[in-house]
Each structure stands twice: as structure tokens, then as C-alpha cells.
Image (tube, rainbow, N blue to C red; front, side, top):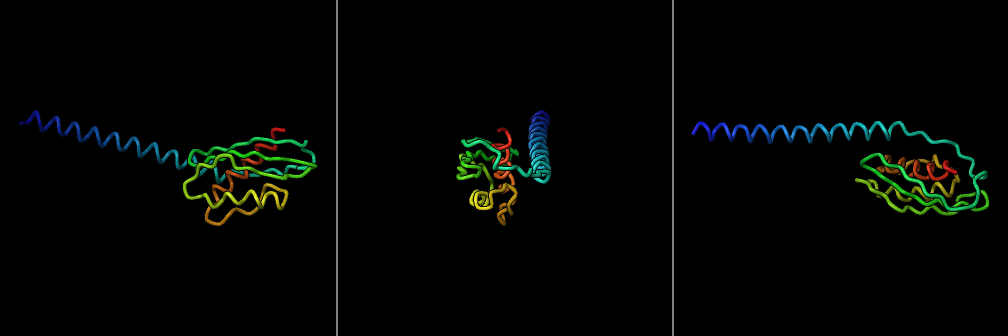
Length: 132
């Protein structure tokens, strides 16, 4: 009977340790994600100096990922296609591409309630244009 009790205690302790390790790993990922998003800054890219073409850019901060295709024609962004957007509650940020095109700049106001996704999408656009 004592042997069964020890085995059960060992199993319970093992399960607790595994749960704690997964929880700690998750909390580290959340902390890194928050740091990455809060430290994002945007450059003032001169769109008029970018050659006509279609450019792909992406941004990944673990919990949010965006991949965009930006079309530049005659010194202006004419189209931004959101190819991928992995998000938690930030789907409403997807309309930010319209604001970027309307203002012809990347650093536009974030979409309320979807600030982190807005930042990630804007960074994906900047990454597309800054590689050219």
C-alpha cells in the first residue's frame, strides 16, 4: 500500500512540475511579445523614392504575425494586400492598410482595440518597403 501511495505522489508531483514548466514558458513568451510590440518604432520612409513594384514584408512577434504585399506605383502605395494575419483578438486591425494608403505613410493611428495587431501590420509594411 505504501508503494502505491509513493507512486501516486510521484505522478502528482511530476504532473505539477510539467504544468509549472509550461506555464513559466508561456509567461516568458508573453513577456517577450509585450516587449517586442512596445518597442516598435516606425521610420519615415520616403515612398516617392521607392521603385515601382510589388514588395513582400512580414513581422512576427510570436502571438501576432502579419505578411503583406505592398504595391508601389508612381511614387505612391497603391495597394496593400494582407496575405496572412495571425492574431488573437486583433482582426479589426486589418483595416489599417486603408489608412496607410490614404495617408501615404506607415505610422498612422492604431485601430482602437487592436493596437498590437495594428503595430505588427504596420511593421510588416515597413519591412516590405525598407528592403528595397
